[in-house]
Length: 150
Image (cartoon, rainbow, N blue to C red; front, side, top):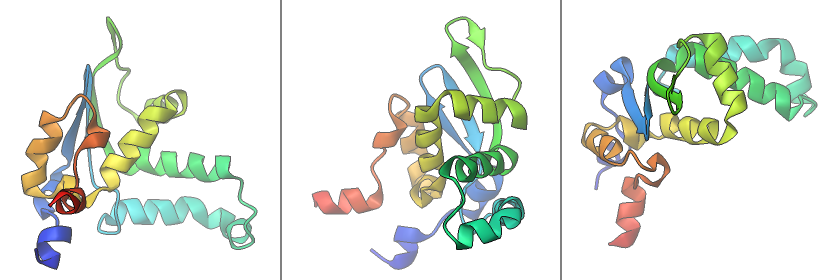
């Protein structure tokens, strides 16, 4: 397998976003990577006031997480649909509500952020696997895992 096959991404998927399906709801999202200029610029801008604290290792983890979640809410989440709980629709998809959901459901935040960082989720042949695997997106096999099984 070539480097391009293993690590290359579909630029169209990165620009248009992918839909990550969970039971009862789905989220359309962009790739959270170095190739996403808006994500990188926003992350840098929001961390800039805290540069000294970061250099000295004094930035509290809670503040770093807050900045990261704000960045993702502003630049990665495109839209969502489905239910917050049975019979209750998700709130309007805006930065404030996205951040609120991330804070209230840390397991969702962890899984979602992991999914939008994975380059394999933004490779054309992997898109079908994400949709099929709506019961547990964390278990989507990466190409590296598939190689280990061979």
